Length: 410
Image (cartoon, rainbow, N blue to C red; front, side, top):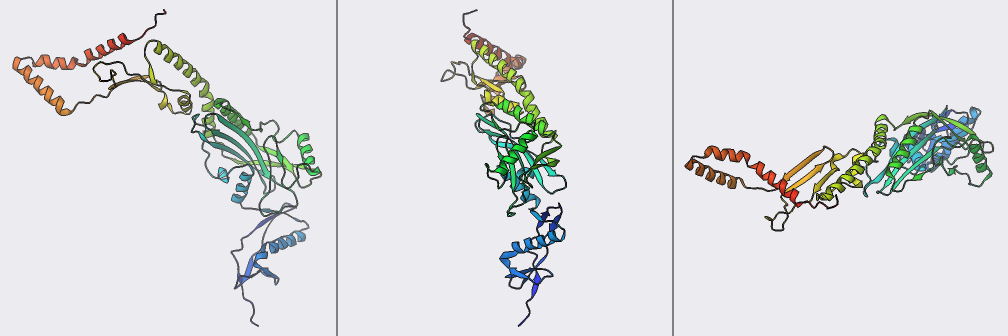
C-alpha cells in the first residue's frame, strides 16, 4: 500500500488563544493529504477529517496549557473582527473604528438624518482584552435628537463558545452580561458588586436622552458628555472570571477619534447658538417693523436657515422684498427689479432683470448722436447720458415711499 503524501496546509488559518495565566498561544501548523480530506498537526501522526480542525486546535492548545500548568481561557481574534463585534454589541458598525469621524450635527431641517459616534478605546492591563465607550448623537429630522452612551467590554467568563468574541455592555440603564440569565444568582452578584463600587463609569452621564425638538440642548448634552469622557485615562469594569465573587478589571486608554477639530466644531455649535438666537430675535423685530412701513418680504430666513447658519452656512440668511406696483407692466407689478437684504454681509442688493439687445442699444445711440451732431448738441447728449441713471433711481425711491402703507397710530 502506497504511503500517504502529506503537504503543508497554509489555508488553515492561525489562531491565537489566551491562557488563564495571561499568556497567548498560537495554534500549530497543519498539513493535509493530497485530497485535503485528512489533516494533522505537523510532526504528529494523529489525523482527523478536515471538518474537525477546530477540535484538533483546541486539543493542541489544551496540551500546551497543561504543560505550562494552566488552562485554556478564550480565543483572541484579529483586531478588525474584535472591533466589528464590539461595535455590533453597541448597535453600531465597525467602521466607527476605522473611518475619520464626520460631525453630522449640522442641520435642523426635516432632511437631517444621520448620526455621529465618538469612540474611546481601552485595553486591559497585561491582557489582550479591549473595552470601548461609544457616544452617539443621532438626528431624525427637525424634531428628534438623541444622545446615547454605551460601554462595551470583552467578557471574561472561563466557559465561552469561542466561535465569536463575547462582550458585555451597559447603556446607563441595562447591564448585559454575556451568557448570564438576568435573574440568576451570578447576575445578581455582578449587580451588587457594581452598585457597591458606585456604578459603571461613576460620575458620568450614560443614560440615553431624547431631546425632542431641542436641537441646542441636544448638542450641549453631547458636548458635555464628550468633554467628560475625554478626561478618562482608565476605566474599571466587571471581571467575570469568578461569577460568585466578581472583581473589576482595569482598562487603560488606548485611542480615540475625538480630536481637537471635532472638539472645536462642537464647541462652536454650542457657543454660537445663543448669539444666533439674539440675531434671530432682532431679525424678527426688524421684519415686523419693516412690514408696518409697507416693506413686505416674499421669502425670508426661518428656523431652518438659522440652524444652518449655526453650522457655518451663512448663505441662507437672505431676504427678498416683494415687488412694488408698476403700471407699465401688464400685471401691475415690477418683476424686473428685486431688492435683497443679505444679513451675513450687511448688504442691500438691487438686481435689474431687464435686458435690451446690443443691436437695439447701438441703433438708438447712433440715431441720438446723429441728431445731436446736426444741431450741434453732442456735448449736451454725453452729459445727459452720464446723468441718466440718477433721476430714474430717485424717481423709483419716491415711488416706493409713496406706496408705503404707514398705519395711522403714531
